[in-house]
Structure formats: C-alpha cells, structure tokens
Length: 342
Image (cartoon, rainbow, N blue to C red; front, top):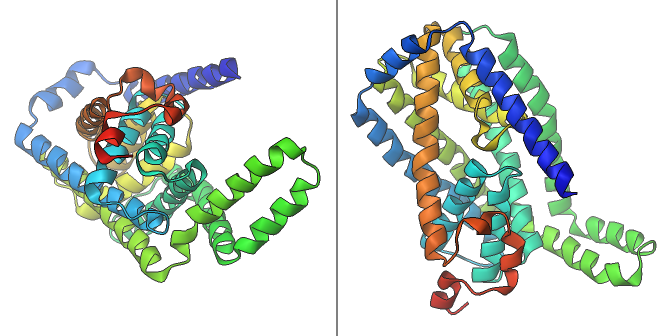
C-alpha cells in the first residue's frame, strides 16, 4: 500500500514537471527574471496580508459545517485550517486535511468521520464556487481558450453530481442507514460496529446542509473566501503593472483551482503556473510577464500560510513528522488540548 502511495506521489511530481516544462518552454529565464526584479514588494505584502482574511473566512465556513457537532470560535478553527494548508502545501496525498481533522477530533472531540465529511463537503462547495467564477467572469472577459472550456466541462459534472448526492443524503439520512443495514448482512461481526460509527459520522457531517442558517453561512463564506483570494491575485497584479480587471482574476482563480483535480506535486507546482499563465496570455499578457506573475503569486499564497501553519503545529507541541503520522496523534496529548482541558 505504501509503495503504491509513493508511486502516485512520484507520478504527481512527473506531472508537475511536465506542466512546468510546457509553461516555460521557449522562454529565456532572464526575461522572466527581469519582470520579477521590477516587482513592487508593497503590493506583495498587501496581498499576503489580505490572504489571511480569506483563510479566516474559510475557517468560519468550516465552523458552520461543524456547528451541529460543536460550536467553535475562529481562534480555535483558524490554526487548524492553517495547519491543513501547510500539510497540503509540503506533503503529497493531501495529508494536511487528515492532520487538521485528527487535531479537531483530538482537541475538540469531533469524531473523525464527521470531521472528514465536512472537509469533503467543503471541497465540493469550492468546486461549485470555481465553476460560478468562470461563468461570471466570461460575461465580462473576452478570452478564447479551449483548455479553459475543457477544465470547466470536466469539473462541472463531477461537482454537480457530488453536491446532488450530498443534499440527497442530508435530506434523507435514513436512506444511508438503510444501506448500512443491508451491507451489515454481508459483513463479519467485527466490522459492523466500525461501519455503523462511520455511517453515523457521515450523517453528522452532513448536518450543516440540513439547517438553513448553517447552509446559508456555508454558501456565503464559500463565495466570500474565494472572492478575497481573487482580490489577492488582483493586488499582486498591480505589482507587475498588468492592468487587468477583477473579473479576469475571478477567471484565473476558478480555472487554477479546478485544475487542482489534476494529480500533481504538493502545492500544485507546475500545474498552477501553467494555468495562471494560460488565462493571462489568453487575455493578452506577454508570455514572460504572465509566467513571472504566476511564479510570484504562487509564492504569495503558498509561503505565508505554510509558515503560519507550521507555527501553529509547533504550538500544538508537534513537529514535522506529525504531517506523515497524523493518525498516530489520536491517542497522544498535544499542548493545545492540554491548555483547553481537552
């Protein structure tokens, strides 16, 4: 099993390398570096600061999904979300998601299955927001790219189907329980109780979709958080004097994040740069300038939250190895849980 996981990670690195090669082929490094040297760092600092407002909004969205199980303040959620970003940014297999859910269970007694279900629901809402951004942006932006249409056409049925399934299960939780009952007839006795706990955790994780106020909060903060991230992209564009509109940055954010469905190395290295440059070049930005911007905006949204996540991980009394051994933490105390009495 481990060898298969690492084979998948190796394949992701190869995919990233291919996209990097495609994005930068035919370009002279000096041309890209010239644009980077001319960057105004004030705009980069402003973008990095605003990015954390987006992280706060995403944390509040998670709070709405969790509220049926445990009402948690922003100061409890934002460190876990930052740790999750950090883990995803530096390690394959989206290990940060597992780590933040394990820490949620450890520090705040939210069952693992329930916490992981909320994370999956988040990803589905993210996909729907990205599709919305693309459709909205194309009303204001003149751009012709078959690759952009391909990303949207592949992602749309995936996310629309997923959200339909989630809402159906949220509306009819007894249907999932009925399926569990049928499956238990074929399971050994030792597995029936774990499966029952898993199903109840999934049902609990979907609770936020059954409460109108919580659902409204999830939808509102989904759009707000990603709208803020598009604002970060826009702020950084001023550092390069790109003279582009906010709707174009909505398109960039939508395309880049839907392209996250492509397996790649941690942080989507290569894939990120390729699709950012693809949209900008389609909007008339010179290739070298578009690639320089792609590299810099990737650092702006990658580095600060990764450092913050590692800081919060250390405050939990944990180290780097916690990313790869997240499930081993379930029975171990952390600094944060001992402070909170958890």
